[in-house]
Length: 434
Image (cartoon, rainbow, N blue to C red; front, side, top):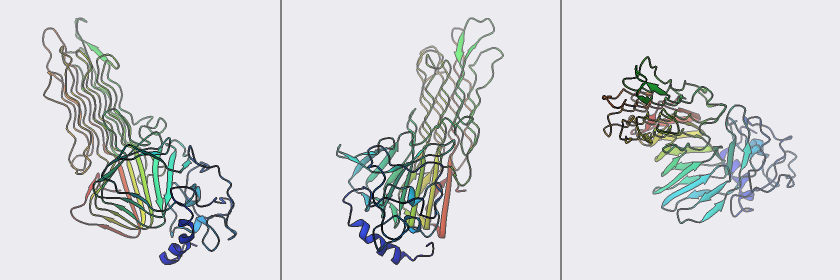
């Protein structure tokens, strides 16, 4: 029941921990009998590679954990958003990422690539959502990213880590975009129908003799993306629209940000659009502490491919939802937008926009200084949440100058501390939590 104490819940979980040596199902949940849950419209089936459901329930009459413990719907003292413990393939033992270096998780396959190059298959469950990415749900007793360790998650599915005990992020946990690549669950087609930056187009001078590309629009999510600039010297040209703001304050459903638009002429001369920040939800039954970095940055818009193309728009920041009985933030939680790419002129060279910053509230710089094309707009952050517009370049008698791509807007951060929420200096929240 929802009033169960921490000690009682920990004692109830002790039996299940002894049954598992890795993240494998401790039991089969009887969802029809279990209470609680906030988990979307999916059936909570196992992810790829997971054992099929149907292992026998316990004798407690509510399904869930082994004899003498509690039903899955009573594992937490609160009802989490978007998912339920009963959606999980099982409650695994502690998940500790403590080797120095970078871990990579593919949310589509559940494969974790270790810093030493070895692979580990994590058993999770897939929870579907309407007009938002499916969720890859990992459930464990506790979760830790140690100092000197980092986890980067990619794939089409959003990432949710649900634990019955504590979550401790002292290293880096990222679902961020990088360049044109989106983070886990980012740039979902249904969620980003209006949030993607528009692609730049080819534009002509008055005599129809010279052409250049407008910059791509920046992606939008928590705020709008910046507009892509016109090709300097183009006749009767218009700017490229950035993506609109969208989503919900409470991140129900869970979703990531939206990509920036490619610069004009897309696929020929314009830069690639920046990837979107992904979607991450951490749920802890007891305490969730961040003294390291949790990030969902947008990727920077690309430099031109050739000629007088427009720079790519920056991707927006993603979505970060933290839920626990007690939350303590002493590190950085960020969902900053990426900078737009610089436009080009005849030489076909320009500067890419920077990816959004992971550990501070400052804007990612738009590309600049390499060509006579327009500069890319800076990405959104705490000190300026909207993506900045790209700027026009400087044409000459023989070539138009492509426009700079717009910067990506910020994402969304929502903190839900059931009994306590503490933000400890010098913590960074960028954008501000909603």
